[in-house]
Image (cartoon, rainbow, N blue to C red; front, side):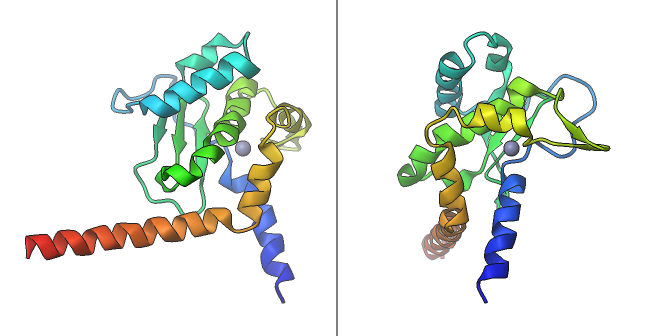
Length: 174
Ligand SMILES: [Zn+2]
């Protein structure tokens, strides 16, 4: 009976890479959001390669999420111009996924809110989005990695690393 589980995982992939569901009011972002230099540099490189004309995309702040994630690999808040990436993806062995992931969020940034609607619902991953996302050579591999349980095991090992660190700290603190 593995099929239903897999189907729900596939359905959830869209949610894992969604733009932030509730955009903040107003157009400014709080000063508290500090960019992560490596992510910001990768964002810039991707922008120059895939969206050379869309210089406004450079204004987005790209940073690690402070919250622990179970579901969301990355999110793009179009109005606040902030991209958060799950800290679970920080280990070096996962570094290769950051490029297709940031590219995915960049496609949201490029399209903004001018996207297809189905009735009242916005299609964040509509036809135009998919066309843009497919330009990154690892777009399909990222989806397969998520679908194949790669993300879930990243979440699990992040959790066990965190609790091991806590145990070490407790041992030191007595
Ligand atoms: Zn998305």
